[in-house]
Image (cartoon, rainbow, N blue to C red; front, side, top):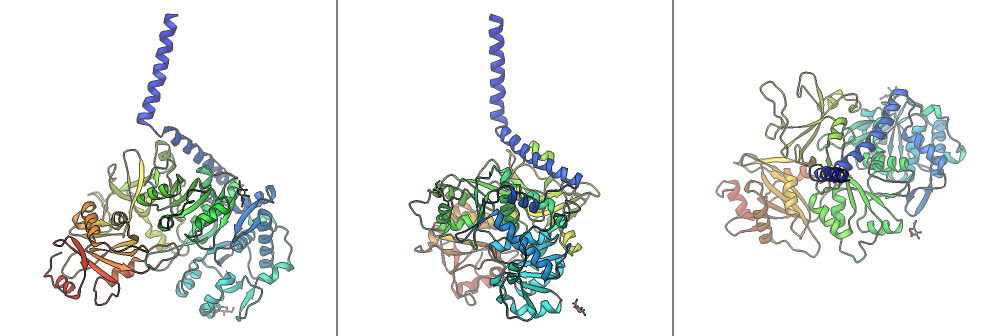
Length: 623
Ligand SMILES: *[C@@H]1O[C@H](CO)[C@@H](O)[C@H](O)[C@H]1NC(C)=O
Ligand SMILES: *[C@@H]1O[C@H](CO)[C@@H](O)[C@H](O)[C@H]1NC(C)=O
């Protein structure tokens, strides 16, 4: 009796201490394991597809769902609901109309230029059902880039949305010269050489096309091309295979999404976030997607309430815009429990929680063309993802030392890269192998080669260069620090613009800020400058700004010049256009916006006059 009591006590103590040790030293063990098992389950499925060639692609999955849950709402757009069956049948009609009335045939690549609307999906699915690859074109791109896009993905046919034909009229002759047939989603058109598609839909049946047409020969067949915006130069067409498309569609599932979820997608469909993760993920779950033509901060929460939205997709800027909206009483009144996206900054993350409630923000790091992905399934504020013992079994990535001045990784005397220490910032590289393949960009070996880095740790190895500087902390949380190129040097130090922007974000009168470096005659590197918009009903406070900047930034990182703008130009993904600001510098004679400069003697930001400008440029005034 005494013996067994001792034994029980010992066992209990043992279990208790293992439990305590786990809580202390491996606090995330179960979450890591759970996440790993979900990823593994998905991975096993993909592995099966790879080996057997019996692939259930995203479009196959859609067809399955349309048979299983035909009357469930698949899409809600501008107040109208479209069931799985309706989208299935319309995409069948489009496939049939294309087959009968256009030169499209299996194996072709067809370009798609459409805004966010239900027909974007119907044309995309219809083309996939014919065995075609679809190239999503960015609706903001200008004519020259557009022509380049056709060349890079080899598309000979363009399907254009009703609202986008008129803006295209200037390049129609060029398209015809290149023998590109243009099909418009309209009942009638007046441009020569442009054919209509919408008027043909009633003439054809809505019966499915033979499934053999869309059967891929391998999981590595191209199904989409998605253009990634370069900061400079022309867009690049990233090759999206069935493998990547299936990986994208697993995002919500892995984060715990279910068929009951209503997913709000205000991002453009021509990017992978909305198409692969958003639409692909909705299909995978058999859920409902509320598609928005364009993001609107003022309509956002009303939409969420109206449609009982439970998950939304975001990019960091979107959350910032929501926080910039005037406070309302019912802003915590909604059913949203999760948001999936990328680029949420720490300060906005916290503010977002305090304003709109404790929505689980699921950061997802990965590029369209990249071969690795991080997921912050723990919800740690500020992290894009997490590495764990399990994760490292699946993905081979490294953070290596980076030389900012030379803009390249540091190589040691043997010519190899060096891993950074924990907590230190390094360039993220991902090993390319059969487990994590890289499919590159269409039509350009050179562009593909540029994203590769060879002989990293030993002769002959190949890595994908993400161009992103990241850090991994003691607890294995990975945070994004900067994109290479988004840094500048001043006084021999590197300034990360995102970091400065984060500090300026502490000022309550700033709505949006853009930090960059400008050249000053007689100085090496670039002096920090910040352009920003002031919130409505707020005023610029040079004294307060001085205090914040002094308190939170080292001398070299402080913005020396300030430019106050009425509005900021945006690209399709709200990315701020830094390039023009950098070029236009800080000369009050050529810039009509209000300019200020950092004055240490007055302990304030003061108006930058012509005479002060001259004294800086002439070197009289020390910076
Ligand atoms: C377009 O087609 C015509 C006739 O088939 C051909 O002569 C011409 O070379 C083609 N142009 C291009 C740019 O492919
Ligand atoms: C949203 O949920 C409420 C209550 O659960 C329900 O009455 C309403 O019909 C739902 N709205 C939509 C658009 O599904």
